[in-house]
Length: 224
Image (cartoon, rainbow, N blue to C red):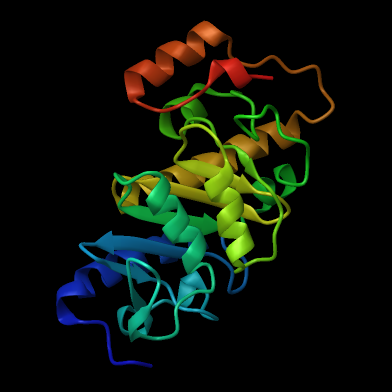
């Protein structure tokens, strides 16, 4: 512990706790898995290591600086490098959610749909709320190699699946990041239910119209 979360960051900590409780109640964060962060200026408020999202309390959270140095609160999640890698990719992101939700984990063990997205455009909601989510290569949880694998992925995206691991979803606000993480799990659930079936996905015209309307990213040149 290096001192409590500073008072001016307590509203951020409270938002993160409420989001964590919601995700845990939805069954998307088994055990002590999953972590959330939100940027505020040069500070990143992040959930701590070893505490389940259902048990989060504002005074238990952690604060790092923009390069991951621990500056206040409890010891941060080991996945801080992963969160920072997503922030560096997309400077407009204000929050990142990492989950081990069951259908996403299952989908992350399969070959990706395309070079640009682990999941196919099964529903309009995936395309309009998340966009493409590429599959990052496996590396040990909490390792710099995991973050480096995310950094090396080409193209624009604000979410990804982590091979054999889970999901990472960013948003311009915490609510949007949470909604994206939930939508990734729902899309993965649909894909897993269809596994082995001759499924039909949204066509290029539909995907193009949705991404243009909602400002998400889907590279049709890399579609499966």
